[in-house]
Image 1: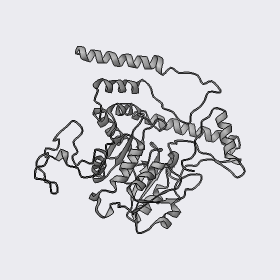
Image 2: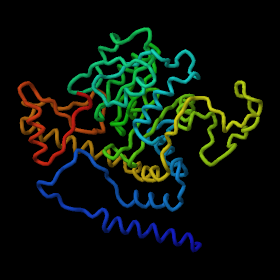
Image 3: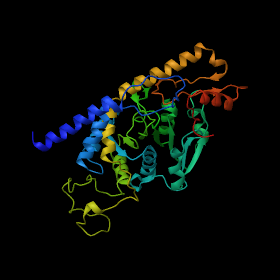
Image 4: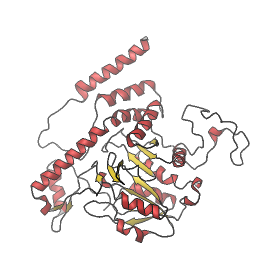
Length: 384
């Protein structure tokens, strides 16, 4: 081992020791302390990875990004995954990919319609409006809080090109019904999976992760989510053409697939003919879409690599906590005052939150104020 390698190993060992001894010191809960609805969960693995990446000082996407994208694809059992800088960016890319001219007649154009839900997070819908497409809102059912599949046919028109909806608070929507509707009418299906990483749905006797059943899935890695890298998100698909388009939009709209800092990995950088450009034009500087720069940094990816290994544990704990809350409320006759959450049929949710709907006569504001005054943080269900 060289002196440089030894120095690096010493630094990482000290970082792990510091984190284990001081930074992640376990403290017993004291009644009255505020309980957040969600928080980051990590240990010395994440901190060591972060410092390891910082020591390389590779400030954009790099080896940890490659490792994370492969790891996420393997975890979800999909062919392609692209790391981005947020879940909202992931939704933007998922939608914009469907506006590519490379999709021919299935391209979403301005004025085309996209079916979505009335109770959802803003950035599921924002890309449609920004582009000039028209969101068509469908109501949700209670207590699943997902799209009412019986209303889909009524929302359909000659201009409908896609369905883009989220799995609300980790509870999968009726994928069987929605997928059948999309296939019947040749519509794209985008699963906003930002609140549901780790949730599964049984389709045709096969259990699959949500986000992998439609054409494109998205994830968010903001701290309250199922795993985190601070800021971050991902877009995933099994479709090679969609993957190519997604990565083009993410990386400035360029046509070249070479990663940052690498050239001519395909061996054809200077021998192509691209539209009306001169023959042999440098492919690295050919742009086929009006794209963005939505890449994450390698330091974020380094944290994500450590978090991804913990996903099975995170999912098990979320299910355990949700089950414990549900059993406790039922034992105290809470159903007299609240509608309690229920999973969708054929679904095994990796719950993101625990949703209560007040029954008639119960004052929601008083309930929220009481819970908050007793140190428990609350949040609304998305819109409204």
